[in-house]
Image: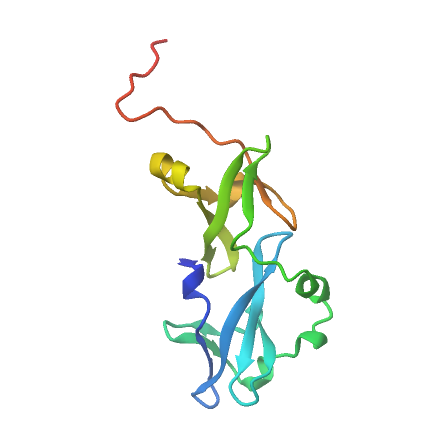
Length: 172
């Protein structure tokens, strides 16, 4: 099931052992190499420190939040050796410019949809300039259309120009 970015953050982390919230999800941790959410930055309810909740430690996802075994699954970012490079990148998808291979500017990432089973970003949504939004509306880009992800921008395959509604199709 796909979930928009706003449905992923500002949720409670709930402990199965205590049955109560132990943290609040602040932001996702993106791996830009494969567009996967590796985990989430969380604010601990008890001492207000920033900890990390890894994706594989989430037992269940409910409308109220993420269910985990216990507070012990929340880890200090310095202890995550395998994710050190990803954490240092501090990659954020929202606001990244999107352009085609031929350098045509498409817009900026305004939202994304994540497959909750795998935590891979499946779609990104581009907000366009005011002029383009009047003529073409917003743009949905599937992960298969993404050609390259750089620290500064997302490069997608060329866009297919569609004929205006009511235009006659060429006769072959």
